[in-house]
Structures are given as C-alpha cells and as structure tokens.
Image (tube, helix red, strand yellow):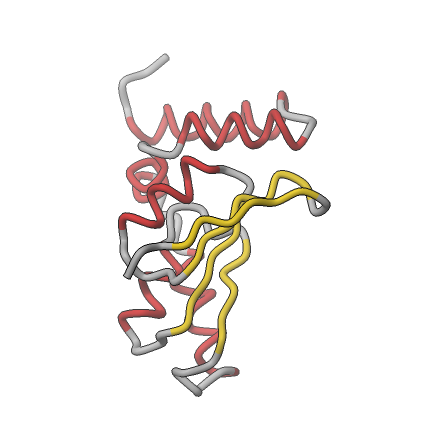
Length: 127
C-alpha cells in the first residue's frame, strides 16, 4: 500500500464498494475509518458537503428550521450549516465513531446511530 493519502483513500473506497455487503460491514468499515475520514476526503478533493449546503440553503432560508442531517458522517454538512446561522440541527448515521467525530464539532443538538431502521438509540449532547 502506498503512503500517499490519496492512494490510501482510493484503496479504502474500493474496499467499501467491493467488499462490504451488509449494514453491519458498512458500519464497521466507517467506524474504523472515522478518525481519518476528513483527511482522506480532503486528499481526494471531496467537496460534496459544500454542494449539499449550497443547495439546501437555497431551499431552506429559515435558520430556525428543524434539520436532520442524514448520513451525517463526521459532521461536515452540519458544521457548514451552523456557520451560516442554522441552529436546530440533529444528525443520524450508521457509524457510531463517525458520529463521535461529528459531535466534536459541537453543532448538533442530538445524534442518533441508526444501524437499521427498526432499532436505533439516541445520544443527547449536554448543553
């Protein structure tokens, strides 16, 4: 494996696409990737959170709206929304470790791990 962050990132994405099949495998993969995710995404020029926020803010201008950041990952979208003045943001993701990274940003009121739609547990951030 190359030491290049971009090459390592591409190898992770190939593994995700080719080797993970179940929700549990996907959750474990993302749990393991959580601490490196933002660095890896940046090394690949991944900018989807910016585009998501640009589109969202055109449709939702009320900064007091209740927002659920689905597939929140490490919280990049939530952080960008909070920076634009949006206040009521909750997050959901399949990976508990990704949500831990997201919680460190301090932008979500609540986060929820959702490994399948019939069984979830909530973690309320202490204000």
